Image 1: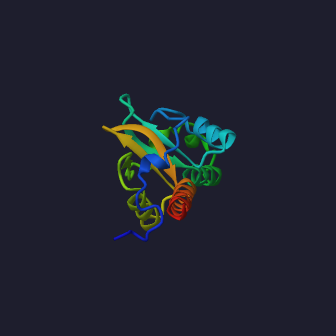
Image 2: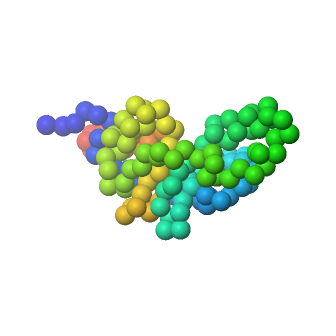
Length: 149
């Protein structure tokens, strides 16, 4: 019996992207926004001293804060905001050995673009919808090609 689901045998580790940037909870919001814009990343993980995921800040979160800051008088409070103040604290994480199709379902059902990947509680990378799609498509194509040989 074969599984017809594309990429069914793939694991999260097959689509993981290394994390180049991590934030401390005390990182000023202005620095967070600069990093998101200059490095063209969609989200940044906020980690603790032991690299545990404390939260995540997306470009949407940053944009929301910019809009809120521009509509308040003076905007001074926005100057003092940190990653801790604006991060999403409830973060869905996956492990490297988890089924990629299961992670894909989580992303679609929870409407998230990316998920942190953890090993023994520590952040090791991220998966994104586009990387998951590529891995599932490529994995399926490679398997089909092998079957024809």
